[in-house]
Each structure stands twice: as C-alpha cells, then as structure tokens.
Image (tube, rainbow, N blue to C red; front, top):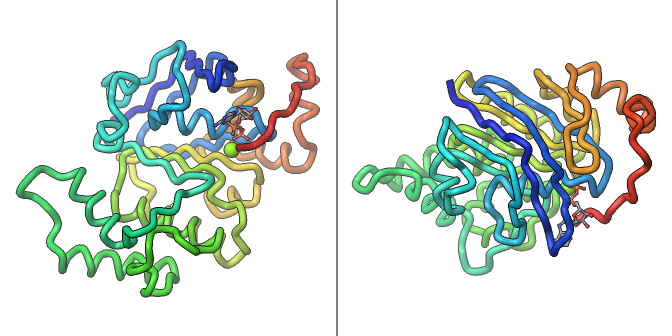
Length: 259
Ligand SMILES: Nc1ncnc2c1ncn2[C@@H]1O[C@H](COP(=O)(O)OP(=O)(O)O)[C@@H](O)[C@H]1O
Ligand SMILES: [Mg+2]
C-alpha cells in the first residue's frame, strides 16, 4: 500500500522555526484534511514536502513508500508521485498550459514511453470539459491572467493529467464560488483511488461538504495537535479554534502572516 509517512518534521524559514515536529501518516485511499489558523505553517508543510529551497528542513523524517523523500531533489519528488496544488500558483510567461502539461507528463514517464500528442490532447480536452474550463485555456500562457478560480481549476487539471500517488491541495477552495467549488470537488472525488492519498489543507469546512475526509487534523504552532473525523471540521467551523487551545492548554500564538 502506498504510504506517505511524516515523522517529527521540523522546518525553518529565514531562520525562524515554523514546523516544530509534525507527525502524520497517509495511506493510499485516504483523504486527510488539515485545518488551522492563519500563519500556523500549513503552506510551509506543503512546500517543505515538495522540497522548496526556501524551506530548510532541520529535523525529522519523511518517506514515500519507504523511500527517503527528504533526500530527493524537487523533480525526483514529483517523479516519485508527489503533487502540490499551490495556494498561489505561479504564472509562467511564454509557456502555454498545454506545453507545460505535456512536458510534465512526459517527465514522469520513461524515455520512449512519452504520451503521443493526439492522446494527450484528447485527454486534456476531456478533463477540461469535466472541469468546465474554456478550451482556449489550453493555449494560454500558464496561469498568466487567469483569475483566482481559473488558477485553481487549472491546478486540478494538472492533478488529473499527472495522476500522482500523493496529492496535496493547499487552500484549493479559496476564491471559488459555489459552482466552481463543486466542480473542483468533483474532480478530486473522481481521482479518489485506493492507490492515491490526499492531504487537503483548508481554512473552511465548506470544501469538506463536497469532499468527505477520512481524517481531520488541527494544526497549530507547527504541529498536529488534534485529530478526528469529519465531525471535528464541523466543530471548528462552528466554534473556531479557542476550544482546542483551551483543551490542550496552548497559549495564544502570535498569529503570523499568511504568505
Ligand atoms: N517565504 C516566506 N518568507 C518569510 N516568512 C514566511 C515565508 N513563508 C512562510 N513564512 C512565515 O511562516 C509562517 C507560516 O506561514 P504559512 O505556512 O504560509 O502559514 P499558513 O499556510 O498556515 O497560513 C508565517 O509566520 C509566515 O509569515
Ligand atoms: Mg497557507
């Protein structure tokens, strides 16, 4: 069974420790949701797992199917099947969406086993249709001039075409109206599979009305401090985070800026 195992992960950014011993294990077939206040390190976790050079890992261990993830280069992590839908997807001028996607797919395949142009186009068009994306987005420069919601759909399109083993969605619901939220959630649900694990980072419970998680975790001060089922997300939505702090005797953290 495919497994992403994070043990006591610590990470620093610009000298400041953000992840302070985070432990989490995700198996294929499972959807885990992480909720937590702003600035608590959720996006830092996503970036540290992907190997973003700004996020220095200072302790702990991460394995993907028993392979040491932290030893891998960024592209090796992607090749090993890790995928991140970013909170703020980057724009790449001069590279069209379809060129980007086809190279990304082929980079994950063996030499000589590249996807043919015709199969790629067919697949992309069918996924774009499912996501109710305008076909012209295939030929636009990557994320350039895309609205917030269009960028998010495009991240889901990438996920659907790349078919990764582990998917991290960072605030994929932010900036989406209800229709777009439903479309994005359908895309995710369609990709649910016993061979694929999901880590969904979200501020709001509403996404979890459409994607039912198996586990919900509360992250505070750089750690998972509480875990439960979907009912935990409902309680957080209704009551906020204060009760968790009280229950655990956690002092109010100085809430950082979201980056
Ligand atoms: N690139 C960065 N440069 C400086 N500080 C950062 C950077 N990324 C994150 N931080 C800091 O790390 C903390 C956690 O941020 P982040 O992981 O984005 O939180 P969350 O996603 O939970 O809102 C914040 O205090 C933020 O200011
Ligand atoms: Mg964030």
